[in-house]
Length: 251
Image 1 (cartoon, rainbow, N blue to C red):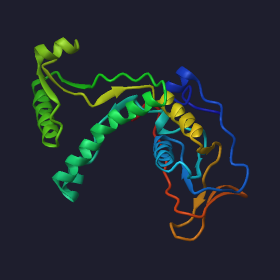
Image 2 (tube, one colour):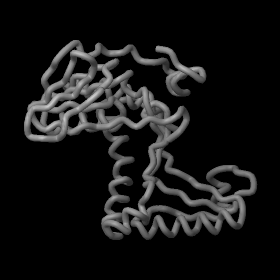
Image 3 (cartoon, rainbow, N blue to C red):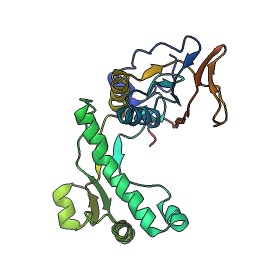
Image 4 (cartoon, rainbow, N blue to C red):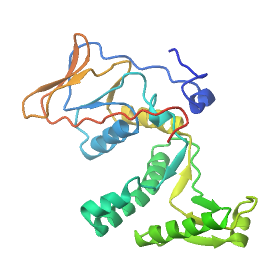
């Protein structure tokens, strides 16, 4: 597979790209067809198969599992939410607090599943420490810390210059805030391990199978076109997991 900028990502340069699975050879029938073999698609397949083991689930991936953003991110497992303030305006503060709690719990859940399924993703849970080095940064950091507390993250802690220095040596650091809801990991190892796990549970994965079209969500049988003259027809409800793409090194 040809790549640019020296490779797909740092993570695949470290461990090498996986051997691609077989593409969809022709028409196939599944209870659920998931488009995209990144984290969204694979976690969807994992929890569906765990909840209803008899489901016939197929994952279609254009390149290989983890080729997109799932194999190109910064290696953070973090509880941050983009757009939380807007969510609170639309749905209320209590709903946003519940969403934040779910994000906190997700960090623990990913680590639990990796341990239970023996996925070695170099996970280390040390939390997340954000450091201020100027008075202006410290003022903004304190505002951020107060906002996180207001959204239910009561186990977050605020530290002065001395306490911060005891945790990390950053020249000129004047303060920091720390949350336990964070870890570092090897994203390519996690996504390839998750793909192996769902396959072992009985999920079918076809790689090198781009999905070109899917039909509207109606009660009638529908078809997800993966390539000319091939399809994945799902006679029952077929939620689709879309893939996210990002440049190498982005979150």
